[in-house]
Length: 134
Image 1 (cartoon, rainbow, N blue to C red):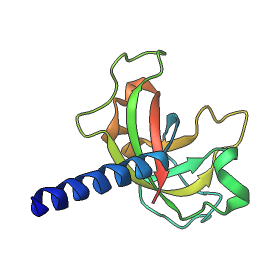
Image 2: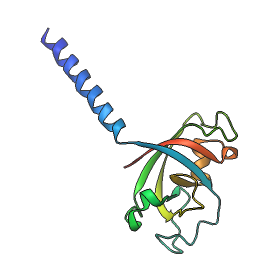
Image 3: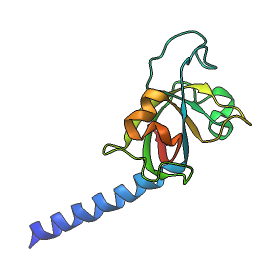
Image 4: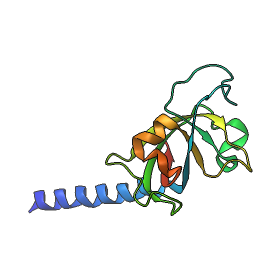
């Protein structure tokens, strides 16, 4: 009986923790950015690869988000084109290397083409996402 209580307690704690981690994620729009990716607002002409993204004004925080990593998950379409854009493995980790200023920025995170293509059909152009800073 004690082992049943122990495992029940572990299950309850694990479940509560998972809700806490889900609460840390935000939802929004992810858009696709095509090369060239340089210069960037964070690193100038220093190449940081292709698993990168630009942050919108709300996330930018005066550049404090530069170099931070975000886990981004495709959660659905934006009803602007591809109805089911998410790929089978719809999560990618990107580093913020740039600023996506208004009015040109149409989403929360502007993902490099290569990062966007991992989680969704690039023809979609924009997708619903959940994202969290790691």
